[in-house]
Length: 359
Image 1 (cartoon, helix red, strand yellow):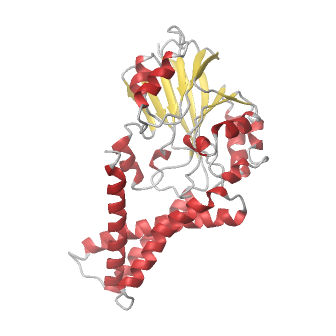
Image 2: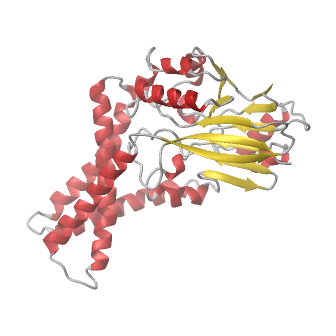
Image 3: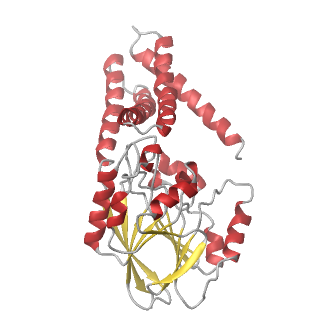
């Protein structure tokens, strides 16, 4: 399946490019199909390359190019969907070709514009979670996928810290992908981390690995953040477990999870909370007696159609789930990925979790 997926995706991308150019030419016949094909290729493929190229640059111009590339990519994708909808409508009703084509492009533009506005801020979601063996209430702030970099920087992080401090949680738990691109590794970019009032614990994500986990985690750790790497500590009446990023597509994914769990000195009479970037390995964590798993990684789908696509691979995408005896909470993330600073169908969030005794 893993070998065929890239082929399927490439085939679908090729179809999107061809169909978009074909329908644009149908609506605007005074422009050749070849020109529309070139424009569509630039819009989809060129924007992807632009975002990839700017990953390792930290200057403001690279940031602007990265953000614009993301907008262009999503506009091209949404143009495909809106042209498809207009095509279906025209099977029943025959509006003007030119005006219906303009309408399709306008719908795509408005969708990206609204998504860009939604992605510019964050909300606080509040969830109550009943935990067995818990002696007293415990308030956690779960923060995931901030993606400090081209999309958001020091000021955005400062707002997250300020809001978190006002809510006065007992613990702050960060589940990876805190940084996004090279610019987030500047000495001053993570300074607001030092202003958290509650103890902060961190589990790495895949983006930390992209830039060298040791280098990134050392920088984060310099701001009063305790890094948990396949280890367990006791604090505030719970066992807090931090797991390194696990790639579910790895050749020995199951073995890695089991090996990590085997090395953890877990106690059966104390509630356990596990922080891990990706919501995978749940069945093994349940077997180990973990009460609550906190994760992120999927951005809650971030924008249509990513939510239904994410559900094809991950059973847990956003919100609170019960899986046997373990509860799984997946954050939609406080930021957006390096590719697109857009939210449509989800929100940037930091998650206030109120843990209460189950009995």
